[in-house]
Length: 268
Length: 111
Image (tube, rainbow over all chains, first blue to last red; front, side):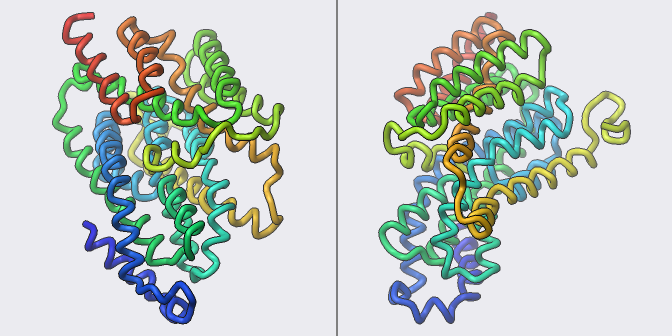
């Protein structure tokens, strides 16, 4: 798997070989850039793989074919939004509300690309397009840390991001194969995996400014709407209520380093 | 939603699912390149908009989970509250495993 990623990486980086060689940080050969990325991505990969397996198993339980489960992982590559989409499809939500939820959950990437774009300046046009496609939470965290220490090279970035991507696809495939074998998912508590996963995910954001007012508002509005009207409106309206609180109160200083809590545990 | 998009039993048809997958992929790519495009065109993101964007994951995820408190049975309600406390200390994957095992166990004992 890693070998495959490195081959792909070298194909992508070869496109910019001419610039790579002439620049200052280019004194380091691409191979050692890749080795650094490999060493740093492996622990993160171990944390990400179980979620790919869970996603694959639940996708098949929710009625997706293995090809659809794989297709979803390969074009979206964002676990939380993929799981949320499955949850809403299970509730029989309208298509637009599923898409709105995927868009809302992935909106954080706008901030990532705004920041990381500055460090992509040595990348070719094709590398930029591919690099943004692969921009998941851990890749963002690692690339920002790398860019703070030295120049971010294509070899480093694509080794790191492609290994996560390929790992995500293989984990999805494994989970989808496994999920087809389970006859009674509720006996294993599989229907409870999504709520508890989203809960634990929410708690990783607790060091952000305004977390408690935002989450508290979303909680109250979501429960109220669910109680009054049932699904699926509780997601959109509860979410919007929390976002409105943040927009009205405005920017807050963060109450701690938010980089660590999002790296590794959340993505893809 | 038109009738061709759903099958007789009300589930989504294969074509609908593929449509959602492709559209979700396109929207996600838009978010991944969007910040770069906005910065390239306008120079910066306004602070209030950045604060709102920052709050999106917590707000939406909370809204997805919350109904467990009213719709679930007692094992689910108690487990979700317990997991909220556990997640202050334990890594994410540990909380997911513990929560799932507790609910499966409660069901095995007939709760």
